Length: 133
Length: 133
DNA sequence: GGAACAGATGAAGAGACATTCATGTGTTCA
DNA sequence: TGAACACATGAATGTCTCTTCATCTGTTCC
Image (cartoon, rainbow over all chains, first blue to last red; front, side, top):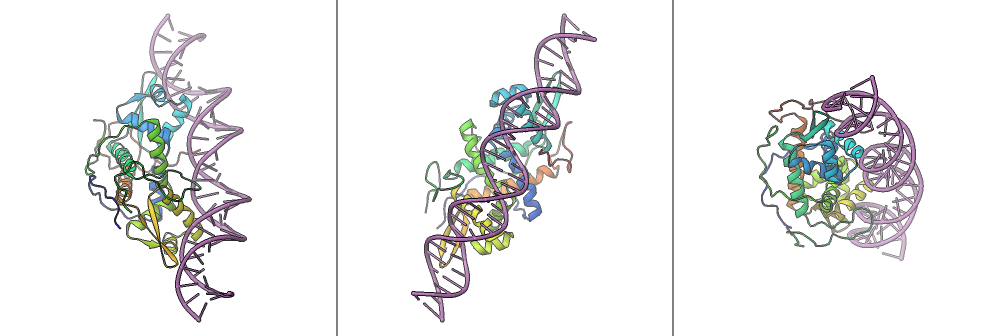
């Protein structure tokens, strides 16, 4: 067997994952598990932006965006600084950007089969660099 | 740049993230957004395992585990092959393992506050968590 | 002070998700 | 063939999450 193999991406230390850590990691990864927040982070990766502009860019309502920003803030993924009447948001640090990039990269390269819940017998080929079987 | 910088991790191509892709990525990342699935994947990263053993290892009921495995299967993250009366599960390919490692690595570093040069508005390590309501 | 802009926040409704219970399918062996 | 084992699957349920609506705080400028 032996399916595809990821090529780049440096090998990071392989951390142990106990039940406690799993909860921690899962909790943070949930921040990347929604289109809206993913778009927010992706926009911020390209540079700081005031809340309202950000909301407009990702196409969400001010309130909804603000709620998500609070979540991301509490997770320590983004920071907001008051500047006049606006609050400029930006990614907290490079770990966030890296995490984002890695996630997008790997996901894009997985042979995604879509169809999350129910049905679907097996993944179907689509955009994948690994299609062996 | 803004704050700190993650050191290892090869620089992967910076993919564009439109609304469509965001949904795709988010959908897959959701697989990593739950402790149970995270534990399943982490265990499989260390080698293939029959469903029942796997369930026992991660401490979940057979049924619950099976449900999650189906989800992971449909997402193309794991594969299961019948061997006698058991079905041996394993990660689909290296992208999955890499994604897992990168995710864990970055998340662990985010929470530890190892993010170096923070200029002002930075979250306190230990305060950042739980904001859902 | 008052008006207008920028953002945050609480409550509520809709939807999604994970787990459990009970049962169904497939396989080995007596 | 039938019992026992290994998984899968459907339904029901409790829980959590995202979004919208209305409102409130903070800031700038007249």
